[in-house]
Length: 364
Image 1 (cartoon, one colour):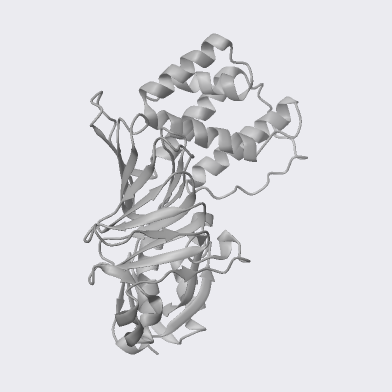
Image 2 (tube, rainbow, N blue to C red; image 1 turned 90 degrees about the horizontal axis):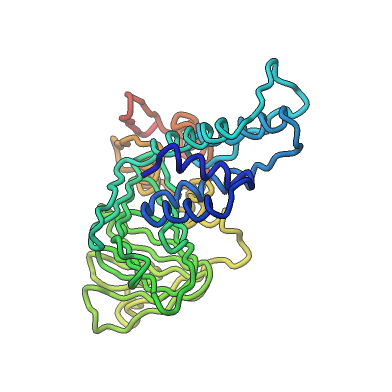
């Protein structure tokens, strides 16, 4: 459980003042509560990304204000640089208890992203469940050190014995995994229709219940994909910068080219789509969401509306099909929903009406 003592130990560790006994105490607390590892990782990242620029009290005050600013944003975005030449009207000496208070503040601000976090019982079969509500994203550190970015309206489950046995998680929604390599303990992601098995790699899995397609995109390493509806079928091996699409309705691996060439689907039940290797992860549709970017790459406005609904926590309704079928290519990042709609109007003229979280769109 996250408490004052845990915060104090983190503060001493980050400031380099922790004794050997205190480090052992912190390690014991981390083993007792797997979720505390997530918070330690978040604080360490904030501390590393926004290092102090001097040793005096003014600079330390600014350093902690930077960390607090990031935490208050609650979505992992970098904070705007603070003016390091401007001295605050009142300078406080940063004692260790202030550091602990900052850590506790980060804990509180981090919690608002989590819609449901069940603290596990001592039973090894008890489940840990983390849910990202619509409009929010979560960064999670698993007990083995693997990192997970959970997209909006997604849920991840794993058992208490995760670190001691085969590492298994169950995903509903979308997540990006950066898995710690361990040949003795394979890492498996279970979705509704496919299983993804890895040893150590980075990949994205998208499996929303209301969508007919499941996507697995590999960035580095190797992954093995199994069709749960047909376990006897050959397993699919993905290589870096390849994407596999599974059609839940057909219960088969979909060849993206089959939409233009139906005969191809008859002779080749599945294929792997190569992704451009010279494009950064931030510019790939499949992984840009991790960097707080929403990319539209030729899908219809109606298809992209589903992404916007999760991104902005809204509901979008189309009065006619003509405007909804318009293909869209456009990047979004920090725009509000209204700014996004106004930008899309330049691509396809349409009218819209916003009523709280409900949006209506119709042809202009």
